[in-house]
Every structure is written in C-alpha cells, then in structure tokens.
Amino acid sequence: MPPLSRGALIVIEGLDRAGKSTQHARLCQNLESQGRRVKSLRFPDRTTPIGKSIDAYLRGESQQEDHVIHLLFSANRWEAAGQIRSAIEEGFTVVIDRYHYSGIVYSAAKDKVDLSLKWARDPEIGLPRPDVCVFLDIAPEVAAKRGNFGREKYETSAMQKRVRELFYELMGTSDGLDIRVVDAGRSVEEVEQDIIERVNDVMEQPKMAKPLTAIL
Ligand code: ADP
Ligand code: FDM
Ligand code: MG
Image (cartoon, rainbow, N blue to C red):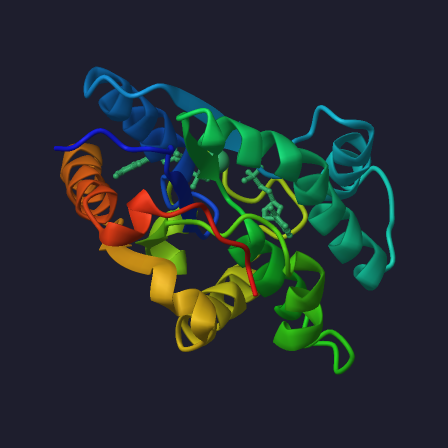
C-alpha cells in the first residue's frame, strides 16, 4: 500500500446500540496496528461547554427547543472542524463515532414540518467531508436487546425506527456516495473484519492523493 500524503477521515454511524463505540475502538486499534497515526473523536463531544449543554439535554436534565438543540449539535462539530482538518493534513487518520449524518437524521426524525432533512443539513455545509462513513445497520428491535438501551432522550423504539428510515433516505442523496452499509447484526469480529476491509478499499482510492474536501 503506498503511503498516504494525508490522513483519511472515517466515520462510524448507526442507530443507538448498533455497536458504533465498540467498532470505533477496534477500528482505531486495527489502523494503528497497520502503522497509521490515528486520532479518535466522537460527536457529541460532551467535554466542551456546548457539549455539556447537549449532554444535559440528552440526559433529560434540561429542555431545548428542537431547532436550538440541532444547531448546538452542529456547532459542536464546527468547534472541532479546524482540529480535524489540521490532523488530516499532518497525516493522522481521524476516526469519528457519529458525525453530521446523525446530526441530520435524529433532528429530522422529530418529524416537524419546519425541520426537514434539508433544513437540518444546511448548517453542516462546509464541514470536512468524510472519505468514508460506515453505517452499522441493525433492526431497532435487535439493537434494543443490547445493553443499557432506553436511558437517553432519543432511545425509544418509535424514534429509532424513524431514524433508520431517514438514514436510508439520506443514503439516496449526495451524502450516500460516501456511505458503506455493514450488517451490524453479526458477531463483533465479523463486523470488525467487514469494516477494516471497506476502510482499506477506500484508502486505496485516487481521492486519497487529493486534499480533503468539504460537505457541499
Ligand atoms: P453504540 O455505540 O452504537 O450505542 P456499543 O458499541 O456501545 O453501541 O454497543 C452497545 C452494546 O451492545 C454493548 O453492550 C456492546 O457490548 C454490545 N455489542 C456491540 N456489538 C455487538 C455485537 N456485534 N453483537 C452483540 N452485542 C454487541
Ligand atoms: N445525536 C448525535 C443527535 O441528535 N445529533 C447529532 O448531531 C449527534 C452527533 O445524540 F441519540 C444524538 C444521537 C444519540 C445521541 O448518543 C448521542 P451517543 O451514545 O453519545 O452516541
Ligand atoms: Mg456509542
């Protein structure tokens, strides 16, 4: 494999309990064992002042108007955007647990007439565009049987069902060009293997020799 002139931007997405955090950690380890320098991030980043408001909202400790919380989630990505771009330019592969895809579909899943997919996507325009997003696909009923389900704001079966439908709708748009669907209902090891194969494919594409682009 030829050395990359820049790092790759990789996103892991999916419903709650799809196995994102498990696979995110494994992918970081696998890329490191290939000799890559890796930076691991997640959104929401609950450590910043904006992230702390998001955390309180998700845990039901504070209320936020739906458009306001949407814009806070987006702002939480914007506050990290410069850091992501610099890391990629320095040759780090940046692996993120959730990104603008979740941002768009979770807000739009509230099904408010004035909070469409398009409205939800607009604040994301200009953020670093992922080289690949691995969507861990799982039926909400299967995910619900995994540990700790039901503790946070959006962890209801109606919401998860709608989120999955909207992820599929999003895949039919320009964002879908970067998405690879992986069946997340299999063993941790099988899913892990599928992810590393798909990520390695993308690392060999000609676009990796060009600068990182932006979400348009
Ligand atoms: P997410 O970050 O998508 O919410 P996690 O990685 O935290 O998901 O996993 C949720 C729960 O499901 C955890 O208890 C985890 O150990 C378990 N889990 C993860 N992947 C699998 C899998 N492939 N099969 C069964 N259980 C899994
Ligand atoms: N979420 C996450 C959003 O609604 N918008 C966003 O932009 C992002 C990044 O927050 F319910 C939702 C998705 C999920 C919750 O959960 C975060 P985790 O367990 O921290 O991934
Ligand atoms: Mg997680």
